[in-house]
Structure formats: C-alpha cells, structure tokens
Amino acid sequence: MVKLSDNFGRPIHDLRISITDRCNYRCVYCRTGTNGAAYAELPFPDYLRMARILVGLGITKIRLTGGEPLLRKGIVEFVRDLARLRTLEGKKPEIALTTNGHLLAEIAQPLQDAGLDRVTVSMDAVDPERFARITRVPNGYESVLAGVRVSRRVGLEPVKINCVLLRGFNEDQIIPFGMFAREERVVVRFIEFMPLEEDRVWTPEIVVRLDEIVSRMSEYLPLQEVSHERSETARRYRFSDGVGEIGIIAPVSHPFCGHCSRIRITSDGKLRTCLFSVWDHDLHELMRRGATDEKLTEFIVKVVEKKEERHHIGEPGFVPASRTMVHIGG
Ligand code: SAM
Image (cartoon, rainbow, N blue to C red; front, top):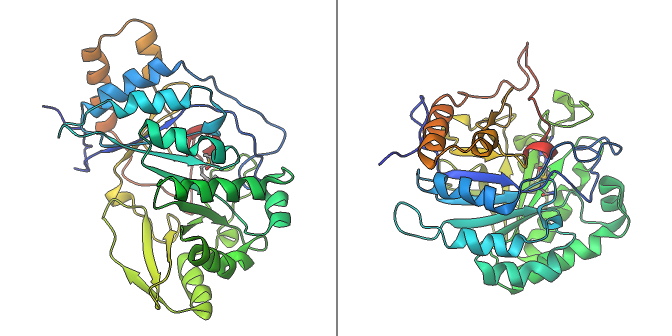
C-alpha cells in the first residue's frame, strides 16, 4: 500500500480542492478588483476521481475552497459523493469548507446533511461598514453573520473564522474579534498576510505578527496557549476565564513548513505541492488523455515526493508563487 509522503519524510494527508476560480467578493488584500476568474473549473466527477485516488493514497481530510466554493452549483451532491469515499482506515474522510459565508445561511443544513463536518468562514472585520470596504460588496456582513450562526446551529462545529490582518487597515479589529469569538462561540483565527495577492502590495511592515496579536489581545483579557497538533496550522490560545478560543496562523513569523501535510488541486485540475510553488502539475491533462488510475497514481506519488521543503517569504531573491491565493484556493 502506497501512502503519500515527500522526500523530507512528511506524510501528506490533507487535500484542498478549489472547485471554482470565481469569487463574489473582491477583498482589497486579495484581488485587484478588476480581474475576474482566470482559470477553468472542472466537472465534479473529475474532482471526485482525483479525490478518490488521493484518499486511496492516505488523504484523510478534504477541504473545499475557491474562488468562492458556494458559487458552484452541485456542491451539496459533490459533498455527498466525497462522504462516500473511505480512507485507508476505512473511515469517511473529514470534509471541511472554506467560504466567505455570503451564501452560507441557506446551504449550511443541506451541506451538513450531505456529510460536511466543519466550516471556516473568512471575515476581516466585525463591523458592517469596514467589512464592506474590505470586501468591496455592500451589505455582506449581515449575510455572513447569519451564515456563521446557522452553521453553529446545524452542528458544523467548531465554526472557525479566518481573519487576515493588515497594518493600518484592520489591526484595530483584534480585540473586537476576541469579543466576537466569545459572544458567538466561534474560534477566530488571525492569519498573517502572505505575499500571495494579485496586486503585489505585500511588504514585511504590513504584516501584523503573532507576538503583536497576542500582546494586543492580552490587553483585553490574558491568553493561555493550548497544545495543537503538529500539522495544525494555527497556534491556539484560550482566554484565561475559559470562555472562547483564538488561533494564530503565522506562516511569516513562525513558519510551519516542517510539519506541512497539505497538497492542493486547483479549479482547473493542477496539483500544487506548496502555496508558494512556482509551477503546478497538470493532473487533469493526464486524465483528459485517458490515463488509468494506476498512471495517475504514479504521477501523483512522483510529484508529491518533490514537495518544496519550505517557503522563502521575506528572504532576498524570493520568487512569487505562480498563482495568487484566490486562484490557488486558500
Ligand atoms: N472565498 C473563500 C473564502 O473567502 O474563504 C475561499 C478562498 S479565500 C482565497 C481563502 C482564504 O485565504 C481567506 O480566508 C482569505 O482571507 C485568505 N487569503 C487571501 N489572500 C491571502 C493572503 N495574501 N495572505 C493570507 N491569507 C490570504
């Protein structure tokens, strides 16, 4: 039995599939605001075949992302099909979704019924006006909040909120997000801004780093770090009174590449072994040419072996990734 791992001995068990390159938000730190979808999307049976082969190679967690995955009609049926796959241990794979939450309220229950386990909602402000300025879409906040609440109610828990902080833009939202985590009973995770945006505006100074987030949040209430799985991206903290949890994903100040267990499939069926890969591997083209499952397996195993050791954010000579975040699937 072949189990995916790379030449650095890292077992690969997390798969992210971008099911569309389209997005209904134009978040200022992610997209130019004028560029639309740049890559194709595949019929669901093609993603399903890739997922089936990968689950047979040791993938245990599948996260659907985009673009905005909820724009894709047929997502509920796709989740149902994924939920029928069995891992090498004979279990249903864990299925998660990353979404901006705009269309979530109506579809959360059907997704949960189909086999979705958890949801992560991206929110970069907890006040409606700021939210609109960031997303460049009016009146989104109420829809997203409704999506978060319905997700909790139907048991897609723990609901996680991803917030990207940018200096001078929304770092004043740190404490409001701490309050939000406690009031809404969600896990808020702050993500350090990475150089993966369409506009190429990243500078080290714009990144609000882990230490600063912890210190600012501690002005509100003391935090206690709790243990996390090695391959988990977020460092976890609980408020000292036991109510509420936050996480910090710190790829810039505290890289976690050494424990990376992830690979990605882009909406057009390319395999990517790192967010910062400078090339991707055309799995779909092989399928289109009629490759057997054995041939696809051989291809995947070879590609994954060569997964990049680490990213080089902030180092001299850093080469930007061949795609930006919205076109990879975060
Ligand atoms: N549309 C979905 C959403 O909003 O969650 C899925 C795709 S979106 C690209 C996935 C996540 O990547 C979001 O949480 C977003 O905030 C984050 N993201 C986008 N650009 C980023 C960057 N340059 N650095 C860090 N996170 C980024």
